[in-house]
Length: 294
Image (tube, rainbow, N blue to C red; front, side, top):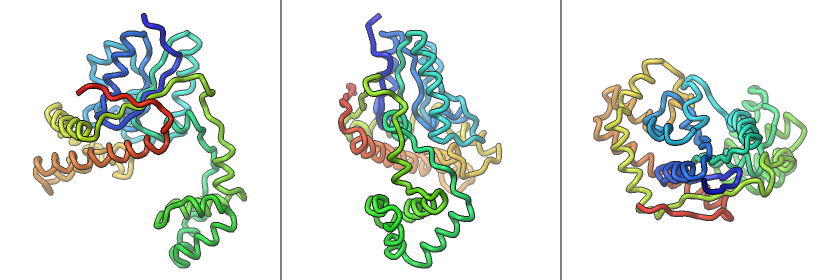
């Protein structure tokens, strides 16, 4: 087998071809493919999350795919607590690993660190939010600048949620959010991994997004959402907000036709891919780019 680094991070937007690339690499190197996509964690979303097929899973070992129930809510922290022991286990066995996905925060947690910020009590967060609404953003931002000037300068205009969180963290912990973040350490040691971003031309990416949506419909996406809705889960759960679930739920409720739902999913998928592209371009500028053939 071809010699491979111990760990390779493969990031990219949905429908970019990163899973296919990872499978090709795994077959050449014997690497284990590990999921770094927040939607592919959920067992109930095999079709809509475009999880590797059973046939692909038979070609190479896959880990952390379909391990969560839709009733669960996995945070970045919970994913890191699952992935780090796995990486250590594979390293001890001398097996290479390919960490593959489109969830940028997962990669950030590994390469930059995850701030272990204490939870803010609900009542304090609600009180700070009420203060924001009463004072207005300009006055609230000036107050935030007194305790966390970096956050006040960095948070974009109109981002009420982040402004409120920054001040609430400072008040609840006695320490600024910026200080908490500055104290983080990467979970992966520098030099212990290779990294790349799969970034096809945007027109090709969008064409792949459209084709994937049609394939999902043909492979049972409507039935997958029908089964999910039958469980009566909280609509705020991550699995219930996955691209395709709300759109097909509207169709199943009789509010839209299937063609309208498909069009809405295509648009949502393109928007999702665009956000991912922007995120990786801003956050992983020094990672090499690859563009698999069409």
